Amino acid sequence: MAHVPSNIIVLLFLLVSFHVNVIAEEDEANIIKPGSSLYAGKQPSTWASPSGNFEFGFYRQGKGYAAGIWLVGPPENTIVWAAKRNDPPVSSNATLEFTKQGVLLLRTEDGVENVIPNLSGMQFVDSASLLDTGNLVLYENGSVVWESFHILTDTILGGHNLSRDRELISSVSSSNHSTGHYYLCLNSDELVANLNISSAAAYKYWVFRTGFSSPVLNLNENGVLALYSSQNCDQENVLANGSTAGNETMMIYRATLDYDGVFRL
Image (cartoon, rainbow, N blue to C red):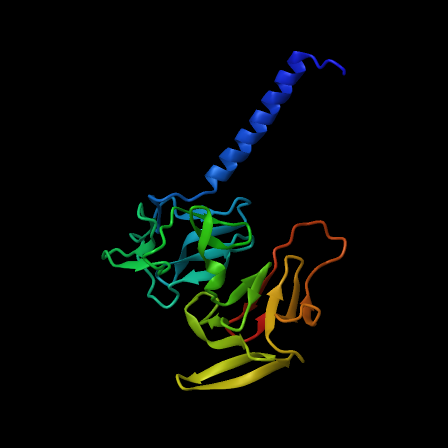
């Protein structure tokens, strides 16, 4: 057996140790710990995903601020998820707090506390993180107990599904992300876009019939938007393909039900 000089072994050990420490520090930096806070009118106002492509925190809405997740520009940030989207904008003195009790809440200038989200009292959240998928996740002992991907607004991102128990609801306008008048949902065998005429009536203005039951809408990380059967993955209808063959640039795809009622990839 060949003899390996001890100085080389030590060097290799140091390199491996350094690599492990760097990874640990990066992972630690991406974990949001109880006791952390964000501020509408001063820094820090956001928590970022590891890549920096997504941020969670306060954004301007109207004459105040709202809380949500956005895809970082240029040319401008794109809101992909809004928390408490129908609440009025808050002032610059509002805070987002991840309390020492593991509760994520929005506190207004007047001291009103809005919990994001409401979890059962049996769960104790001990950390959070914003993933590079744009998904805000809360953990209990390393297990996911809540994620923003399960509370949709008007957008799905790459790697994200729309199932029958959820719906996309448009925003009021490009600058007001409160609930708008259009919504997209799945029925037993079709994808349907609706216009809310009143609280008791809706107009179905677009329908895509799948030809199979129990459909799920999926946008994969390569930009393929497709309907497939939750009972048989071989049954699939591709609605759109945003991928570009041979393009090595990292792309982030989203599908949004815009304020004008058009579903765009």
